[in-house]
Figure 1: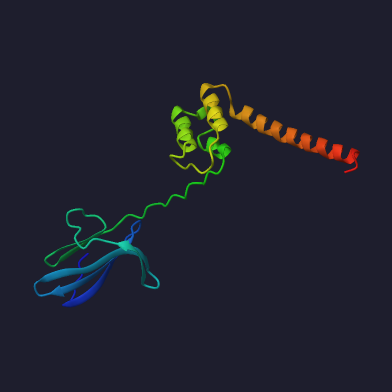
Figure 2: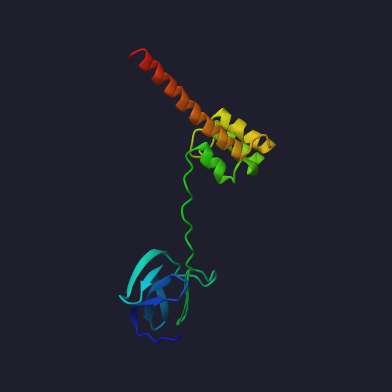
Length: 178
């Protein structure tokens, strides 16, 4: 698209679907066009308001990316594509969540066991405190000695046994009059 501008400072905004808008401030003189500033962001067609997201290049002639290229009196705007922002990864706070994030017990690989080991020794943070039994469990998963189902059953049995133990203690206290 060709646009004629007069001498002096001007603000140009380049807009296209699927791209960030590009706002460029230029100064037009008899000897050429100079870029004063360039930034990319969002442009509201209705209100004509530009919201800056970041800086763009005043010298994008070589890269042809996110900026403006000015040669004599020609101005070429190169827009930055709008990228789909991935949602932040879920924070892992337990061994069970970590195991699930790996695809379950049957999907554990050597690299996963090494990741646990590194976290156990404090070299990396994976979101929870790694215990020796976590490493042993991951090893057993890798070797096929455990499955996600057996882990789930073990957790449920542990909860039942804790409840049974608590009930026993409460009954003992009642019998003794406490």
